[in-house]
Image 1: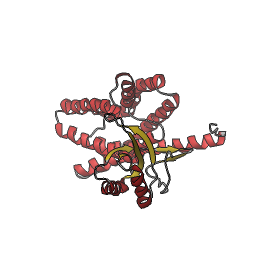
Image 2: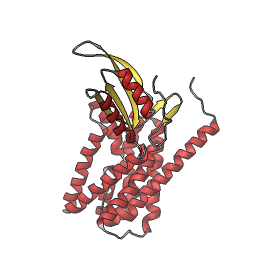
Image 3: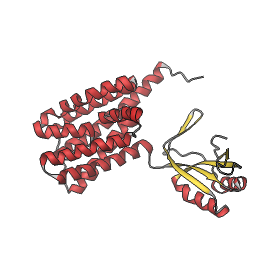
Image 4: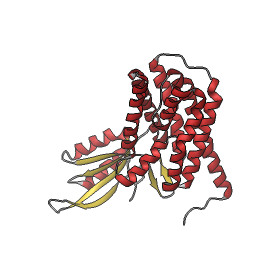
Length: 301
């Protein structure tokens, strides 16, 4: 049966989510006001377009540009995604706009371009990552990317990258300064990586499929030497038609090298397919990469 939260539990859950969204909006505003805007750098997406318009028409309009440009995408999210996401996104955008106004007189960070790019991009990425992790969004172009992904098959990352390519290119062309465009792109890359770290964590999970001529012996060695759980799946060779046992293992990045060494030591002709994982759920528990999973847990067995 599904778990039903009490009103108090639901309230506490929402309060925690909005607290983190508020902190994320504050950090993003700090990055824009103190690091990016004074040094004529921009972010990607709607925030980047708002910063371009701000440089053209004046600092006073930044928050208004941000809200107005996001309104169509909030409507699209309401139509095509889900209402809870719309509420979180709307709250994040409004809080971000308010903090941009509050921090309008904040002192500017003075430093080398590299310092500005790294520190400003990192703070922006942490802020946006917190907002995304707790169900919100600042960039309306991601909404458009999700819709295009559903209808046309392009990945969200491909669509966002395509849009940002034109935004950074337009910035360099409008102001005839390709240095700030390239520096803005570098800032965006730093922020993008920090978003991943906030959402996924420092640890990484890998899923490994192993096809071996001696799966039982190999499975025993892996469980005994690494303490990892595994699942045995039954398959069939596409060409030979012979039945095969396939080992499925979830492993942390730090254990991956040792796992490969053991597999190739026991069976030099073994085949391994390795993929990245962001989250594993078993039963009522969710194993995120930044939470340690007890060794010996057999997933799916």
